[in-house]
Length: 242
Length: 242
Image: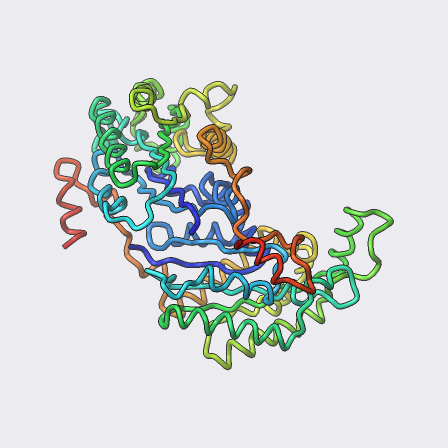
C-alpha cells in the first residue's frame, strides 16, 4: 500500500543502514509513510550494475517503486593501472550505463521519480592512510582513486541528469563546499562518516521535497494515537478509511 | 524476490530506524539477503493494533513476509487511573489480542516465522524524570507505568509464545540481568538507548538463527565483487543464475 523508495548503488548504498547511515535516516524520515528498500552492491561499477538491473527492476513489477536513487561512480572512477583498476569504467561509458539504468527504470514505471547521485569527493591522503592501515609498508604508493578523476565522473552524472530532466545531487561539489570535508565527511577517504551521511540525507530530503515527494506533506498511514478515543477507538479508524 | 522481515509494534518499533536503532541494525545484518519493513505505531496498544492488522496483513498478500516481529505491551501496561490510562488494556485481553494477531498472520502465511517480543522493563524513576523535564512542577507524581505491572504483561506474552510454540524474546527479563539496566538500556525509563537497541538486535539475531533464519547462512543476492572477473564479468552472473 505504501510507496517504496529504492536505493540502488554501490557500497555507499549497501552500508546506508549502518549506524548514522543515510538509508536508515531516510527510512526514519518516511516512517509510516513510505518503505525504503536497499539494493546496494559494494565494489560494483555501472557496468556490473547492468547485470542486476533486470532482476531488480522487472517489467512485470506489480507495484514499482515510486522513487529510486541511482548512486554509482565511486568505483567506475578507479584509475587504470592502479590497484583497483578492475573496477574502472571509462567516464563516457559510465554516463551511458547510467542512461541505460534510467531508461530501464522508466520503462518499468513511467512515473518513477529518479534521483541521480554523483560519487562523493575523494580524499587521497585518507585513501593512502587507509591502505597503510591495511598493508603497512607494502601499501601501494599512489591512491587508486583521485579527487580530480572522480570529479570528471560527477560531471558526467550531472550532465546526464540535466539532459534527461532528472533530479540529482552533486555530492562531489556539495561536500567540498565545507572546510575540512576530507575528514569531516569521509571515513577512509571514500566512504561516509555520520556527518557525511547527514549531508546526503539532508540533500535527498531537499530534492525529494522539491519533486513533491515530501514526508511532511504525506499523511500518516493510520491515526496518530492522540487522535484515538480510548472509549471509542473504532471511530478514529472509520474516519481514516472513509 | 528477497524474503521480507516485517516489524509490527508500537513506538519502540516505529523508532527502530533512528540512530543506533534495532530495525536499522537488522536491515544491515540482512543486507543483500532480506528486506526489513517497519510497521510501528507509537502509542498503540494491542486493542488498537487489531484495527490495523487486516490492512497490514492482507489475505490476498502476493508474497507475505517470511518473518514478523510482534512487539506490543508497553502501552497496554499503562496503569488505570493514571496519566496514560487511555492506553491501558487488561493483561488477559492483551494476551488474547496477541493471539488474534498471531492467528491472523498465520492465516495469511502458514509458514511465517513469528517472534513475540515482551515489553522492556520500566524504570519508574526515569519515567518521573522525563515527566518533570516536560512539565516541571506540574508533572504527575506517580509514574504512569510500573516495572512490576509491565512484568505481568511480559509474562502473558511469554506464556502465549509457549502455548503456541512461537519464538520469543523476554526483553523484560533479559534487560534486568544487567546491572544498571535502568539508565544503560532506557532513555526515558521506557524507550531504548543505543545500548538497549543493541540488546534487542542481538537477541533477535540469536532467535532467528535458532529458527533457521540466519543471515550468515543465507546467500548474497548477487556475486561479491571480489568474485567478478573484470575482463569477463558476465561469467560471475551466469554462475549465479544457473
